[in-house]
Amino acid sequence: MERMVIKHLSGSRANQVEEFALRHHNELVFGRDNSATVKYDPDRDDLVGRQHAKISKDPSDPNGFILTDLNSTNGTFHNKRRISGAVKLNPGDSVQFGPGGPEFIFEVEPRPDNAAKATRMVDAGRTPMPATRMVDTNANQAAAATAGAVGGNRPTGTVGKATVERMISQTVQETKSSQAKKFGLIGGVAAVAVLILFGAVIGGAYWYSSTRETALKDEMTTKTGDLEKKMADGKGLSAAEINDKYGKSVVYIEVAWRLIDTSKQAQVYHQFVPNNREVLSRLMGVNYGKGPIDPTAGGAIPVYVAVGDSYEPILTDEKNALSVPIGGKHTGSGFVVTNDGFVLTNRHVAATWMTTYRFPQDTPRGIVITPTGQLASTSLVPPPTDWVPANTKQEGKQLQGNLKGVDDTLDVTLAGKESRMAATLKQTSDRHDVALIKVDVPGQLTKVEIFDNYDTLKKGETVTIMGYPGASPRVYGVIASKDVFNQGTQMKIIPDPTVTTTNIGNIIRDSDENDKNKRVSVMGDVIQLATGSTGSGNSGGPVFDSQGRVIGIFFAGQQADAITYAVPIRYGKEFLASE
Image (cartoon, rainbow, N blue to C red; front, side):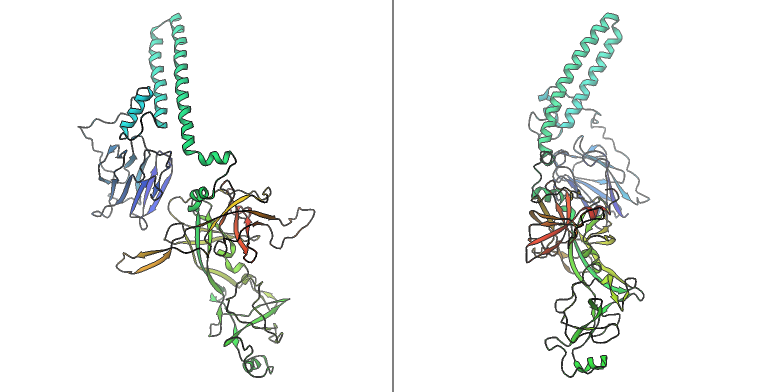
């Protein structure tokens, strides 16, 4: 056995199939509480308790499982029989929460050879549950019958929607059946009279039932449709409501990458030389005197090569005491765009070698040589600010085919979780700072709704930014190992997304080939945000509009000016064939 499978038959999750890997889940808790492993809709599945029941491994049987009712109000039914406490659960068994409540089939995959479904037991002393419960159409009696069926905790005079629908259907069917018998016994004129009478009765019954059903639907809309109603009214969602709805979609990303020479599969380093004029003289064949090249630097200084009007680091695959590896570690943000684990983020988060390289802060000023090895200038220069490792040019030749970036670590963590999931880089945009990565997880992830409104977006509109800025205090989980062969305690970050509300400061649009009047933006197409309260680490996080739809991807900022920027979501939609 590798995983537990829940095949939902009815309720808000009807026709859904969820899978839970046994290596990650020893038990499943079912309920309407946010902490439940399998969470039901708090309004539509009102027969389900906050923590209704659980399925756990049987400690006495490595291939067995136990179904336990967690003192639920409406009861747990195993193969249509209400249980008390715990019972053995076999693959193929049905589980239902409350009479007429959500039902599912329990399975394991692959199913063990000896895991045949248990023989259904019949209790001779118990009256079998009728297929359809008979109720009086009187509202008070129906409410009392409903309250009794679910333990007596519903207030008198209120009836569930499902109960009302059954009452309406049953009333119409019974009336039709009764009148049909009369039609068979009455001839000619009497039949016409009965038909007229029947129409009046059915019309009255239909009017009465329709009135009651409409009233109940209105009540349900008040309870469960607050968010949708606000959207329809144009009032939008608050930042708190957006967080409640999509907070689970915002993921924390950890990255460690390096640049390699693909011909040798070797790490690439930045070449340094001793900070000594005599050594430099021997290397260059020119007498530069004695003493350090740069008195303010340490024992070594970096070497750069002139390329056109700029310069870039001399690269080598030889590791020595003076070489510095090209690569780095960082964190970022992203958001789930499909239920099966595709995640949008920034290109500079997931494929860092394809963006401007950030040299270590302690990198000293260095020397620049020509492609032929001569000293280009006696002046020392700072690290270049425009070098992209993937686009390296040296000796006038494009070496992009020989150099490649690789992610040694590309881990994704869901909000509030401690387990890291390995991701793979799927695609990078050639036009903007966007990348698509993928995690493979059992079950369905919560995805965002995306909406491209870049052409109609206006200044001043309210937006909500979510992500994991580095400036936000970290929360760590202390994880004690239960594995006797790998004992110890780990400290892992438990990500909790930051929510920032701001507005659109400006919409900056670059020209495309169809524009008659050409204009050029130094940043391309971007959405300018009037806030600086996010920052580094938030890169790749979603920007929501007032309706809770993602319209942009946070990617850059100017800390000195307290201005940040987002990539229009259209550059992420290009990856999604279904959009």
